[in-house]
Length: 287
Image (cartoon, rainbow, N blue to C red):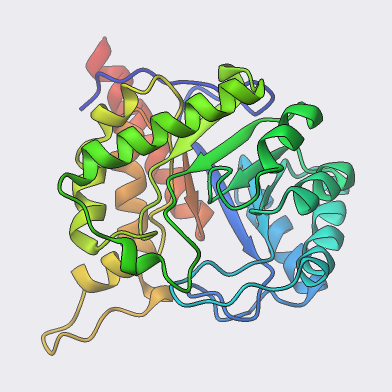
């Protein structure tokens, strides 16, 4: 459990523990918060609250990636994201932009974002990898098999761990071929993206296998439906998304203990406490 060492991404914070990334969804239809932060001023206020709670990174996204979600236009995504990125960057937040579009990535970095978090791993926009290389910023690449409207149709694997690892390795190779230094690349197994609940659990319990790719790992389990399924009531009704934070923090602790570089969460305070406990536990075990 404690064998995997902590890893770092050049250009991003380097505390001696798993990082905690807070989520700011500037969307009207997020699965986790139902559009609470769609208004720019509300999104900025929420982002600053996440910083106050201890977020190492604040991830701003303007496109909902819940199953079945329709994509906004480029102009709409820019209008959602840029004012929030700019305001949070001025407020001393370390901002990452969650986008699959190279144009949004470029504009967000110009507005103050310090890294690009691309859930498509460069597959949705062929200009993304060259753009990130040109910008000289860290790149967080997720395992992805298609857009939200059809991704769950692609949740078919003979061996989910082996296939996700192989497909992530292909993204590492593509990033390297584009000129991205390996020390600026992190990988995300993409829980819930073309994955069933069973696939998610299999990936979480096989993090050591993903560490073999040699890159820092980012895990986003927070409030996702597989936790709602786990916490379902006696009638089979899933626990609502906003009542999954304790379970999310438990996953954060386990990920931190397994050497994950960063967890992406909605409730920063709970997960920050969790990863601090895991870090102290791991340090004691090593000593």
